[in-house]
Amino acid sequence: MKIERFHLERWMTTWELDVDYDIAESGIAPLSIAELLRIDADDDAYEALAVLATIPLGYSEARGTAALRQAVAQTYNNVEADDILITTGAIEANFLLFHALLDRGDHVVVVAPAYQQLLSVPRSIGCDVTPWRLLPERGLAFDLDELERLLRPNTRLIVINSPHNPTGSVLAEADLRRIANLAEDRGALVLSDEAYRGLEHGDGPPMPSSMRDLSANGIGVGTLSKAYGLPGLRIGWIAANPDIVQRCWGLRDYVSLSPGKLNDHLAHIAVARRAAIFARNRRIIAANLETARAWFAANADLCTWTEPRAGLLALMRYTLDLPSEVVADGLARDASVMLAPGAAFDNEGYLRIGIGQHPAIFREGLDRTATYLRALSARR
Ligand SMILES: Cc1ncc(COP(=O)(O)O)c(C=O)c1O
Picture 1 (tube, rainbow, N blue to C red):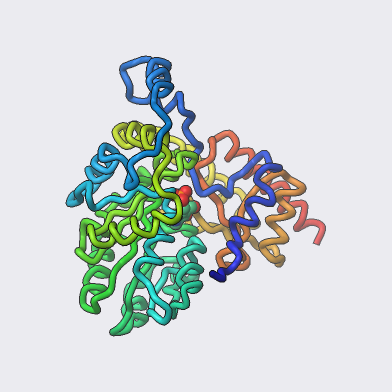
Picture 2 (spheres, protein in one colour):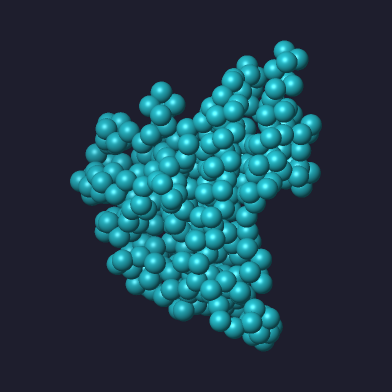
């Protein structure tokens, strides 16, 4: 298989061990095992740790334990445990789905910019990939009329992602229903990457239904990496009809076989306690949004942003006339701050910011960014 270099992942690995203020991250400040065991629990976290210590580390159930699949299914309105396949993060879920559903020459429409996997894997399969663009001149909003124009009678798959990485734009319930209808009319499927579901903002729109609950042709991809703050568990899932689940499972037999047993156990605890976890994470987002609003107001000569409507990510436009990778490398090297280069998303002139970091690190990261950009502007 020939595949494009994953630009953002490579850039992040260049700097992530060296910088002190990583405000590029697409995740939320992660929970420790002790925090997860303590949150919303009556018993002592260390008793729960003792239970963990007794789990035999054999192979786990290949699809994910029935208990975990049942718990995940209950986060939807209309989904059974057999409609769920537990995967190694959303990244494996997407990879399996593309390979199970697509053949060379198939027409696929994919939201763009996007988490690069969503564009690169269909291209690597030899699909005819049409990007559905969120344009700065349209406020980085989803344009449903444009999507309708891009679809063809033989379109096989529509790939969406909402809340969206990297813009923080959101598809409302009515938009999702329209996409479902457009797909059904053409016999197409919809892969809805819902990695950032559950991360609505206090004053933003309510989270709409999953695409899986809206259409027989809908496929939902979920993960514990974002809204749950548990990326290290590497637990994601596919919610789809049992035929698609079986086909993806058949492929997964050759890749990762089954989820790690401890991870499956901890994931079950996290899904059961999600209300408390989401509340903790929304508090972090609310604090960082307040900091960011004040910072952008004070530094409008350096940077502007389209505030995210939900999720953890947004694009910020800087006024300096320099390539985004030069600015991002300089920030990392000279100010110990990580903001991701827009070039990794084909959005030159922008940096991607994540609003999930610990509030103190987030604030200091932004302050250092202003100092660095101001000094750079003065030198030019
Ligand atoms: C839109 C999107 N999908 C999938 C992933 C992969 O997430 P996971 O950690 O669940 O594999 C990411 C990670 O940043 C993402 O932003």
